[in-house]
Length: 147
Image 1 (cartoon, rainbow, N blue to C red):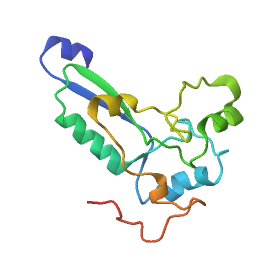
Image 2 (image 1 turned 180 degrees about the horizontal axis):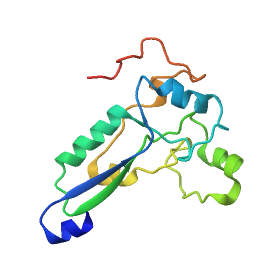
Image 3 (image 1 turned 45 degrees about the vertical axis):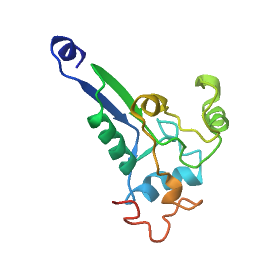
Image 4 (image 1 turned 120 degrees about the vertical axis):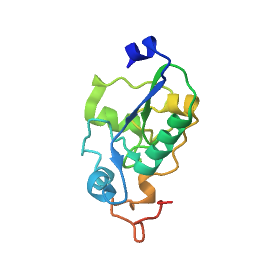
């Protein structure tokens, strides 16, 4: 992509979404992580709601940023809402570097700070909107956020 940008006047934004969730798969995918932090994930308990991802894509399409830019898209919290540093140390020890300061105690393992700063991206949904504290789908959730 970068070579094409250099050779022409096209612009490009690459979106790198985290593990995408929707009301039909929150319970199956994140429910076990909500119940037990020991259910490890390669992305450190990170996820993104499909509707928040759609919002990020709209911001990217409407952007007039020059050249090629890359944005990670994830929810600001982790599945389970646990203290991030604590669970990383418990399950990964010192093998993982944690950049501080953390934006919040239950932060995601993937930072979207650049998307917030450059695109004005601000996710509005959390696993807590779909699941109870036991990781079970809340009654009446289906279609709750579809607009």
